[in-house]
Length: 109
Image 1 (cartoon, helix red, strand yellow):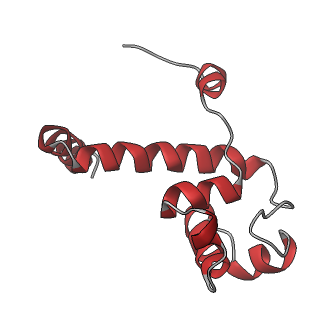
Image 2: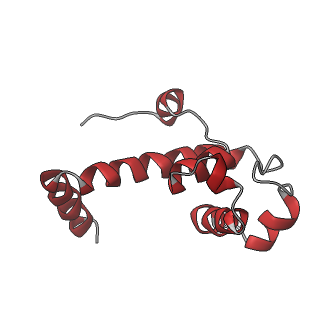
């Protein structure tokens, strides 16, 4: 069995800042970022992904869309979540990969 230590994995995972994560997740450009309600959508998304209260994100992580006061430990979680999103996006375009993932998910329950 192939075993990878966490430190080895961390070498390949680039931390993702909150603004970059939201841009990737929503496929947003500067115009979309300037849209009314965009920050609120990011707050809700970050809350769901990181299991942090929306009030905490809204009041303690900065007032803009950069969320510059987000604790660094969440950047790696966002990187993992973004990797998973990319895999699921790829699976949506590849029925064989979708089936492999679905079977694996069934086995894990």
